[in-house]
Length: 156
Image (cartoon, rainbow, N blue to C red; front, top):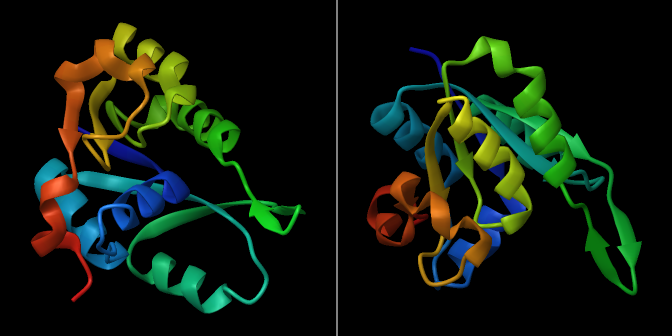
C-alpha cells in the first residue's frame, strides 16, 4: 500500500511551538516512515530568500518540498500553503492508496471529506489536540495527536 503525507509546515511548526517545544523535521520524517510507512512526504512551505540551507536540509531528510511565494503584509510574512496542499493531493491522487494530512486547519475540511468518501484517508495528524478547527470534528476517528511526541520527534 502506498501512503503519502501532505504537511502544512506552518500549521505544524507553530502548533508545536505553542506547546513549548520544537519539532525536529528529520525525526518527524523517520516517524512518518516507521509509524505509517509513508513513501512520499510533501512539505508545503512559504519560500523566503536566505532559507535555502533549511530547504536543502528538509529535502535531504526525505521531504518533497513544495514552495509557495510569500508576501510581506504590515511587517508580517504571509505564505498560505492551503491551495498548494489541496492541489498536490489531487495531482498525486492516482499515485497513492492512502493519504495522511498533517494540519489542524479547517480549510482542509473539503479535502479530508473527499478523501474519506473515496476511502483514501489514512489519518489526520493534529499537532495540538487542544487547538484545532471544530470543522474537523466529524473526522475524529482519523485523528492522531502529536502533542505527546516531544521525546520522539522534538529537538534536543
